[in-house]
Image (spheres, rainbow, N blue to C red):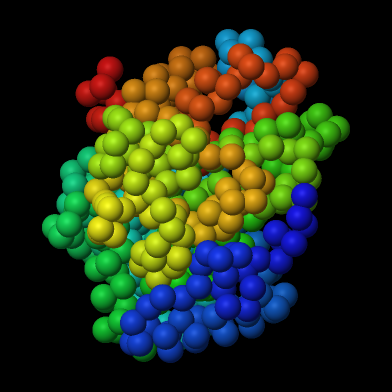
Length: 403
């Protein structure tokens, strides 16, 4: 395996051919300011100590690596461990990145935080850290997502955030990002844009990844302590891909450890029916390299280059592009990418609830659905770590309608 993967991105913010910085002139200076501030923070031990303290005492790290004994027995395949990111404060992995970026904004003297959100978990985590640091908070959210994630809208508002509904386009995550970027371009002197995934212009894909690497570092240490060896397979859902890259990164040099990222297969293989960017081998159409919202990566687009509409039962996976580091890992065949349908994700959520007493977020349920399909082909002595990136409280209305 090419161990140079660990050095990405390069000085231009590129992950091989992917990534970079494709933004209007008004955002070049704030991105350069952010890049320089992050480089200084990364080299400052006091920043790392303060972030570690907040991750432990505010977010609730380390999260457990739970042996799923009944799920293992139920599937009759490999030994399955669940990385319980759902047990973090606010209910998902998103708090890791939000704490890191909020600390960085504080160092930069920015007192106003803006964010985008799809499933609402990033918005809730942003509202929580803004309240913790006494910052003004505005969260942009597509009105389609606001309707299907009403509980998280209420949680954001309770913590003092202003939630701005976005009616443009498909009224989902892509459109919320557009509005957040417009706000940032107008208010760069006072405002930090707390982007929620490994997307966007450099340095965001690197920075968000770095704040989530704690997932994989913990999981690696925990599985070695529990089993005395490394897992055979890592499984995580991929929207933008922050929870997956957070888990994968600590294992990139371990060529025997396979990695599976699971996208939204939606309700069909045709463009507009899914949100699968890297799972082309499964017959999903419409994905090819292009630029979206500041980065060069795989994007779902029409034949004439227009950004395509997407569909997923999970708001957090309903996005037409994928993080540039995932595009590189797919190209290098270091990670495999597949997709799970809406129906399979709902079934997987029900299975985990009834077998292990855990209700997963529908985003995470896509990864579980792929694992359920693969487990019968695996040996009993093999080990899997499944990243449970969020809990399913927010999705109960959707799950109830399906069931």
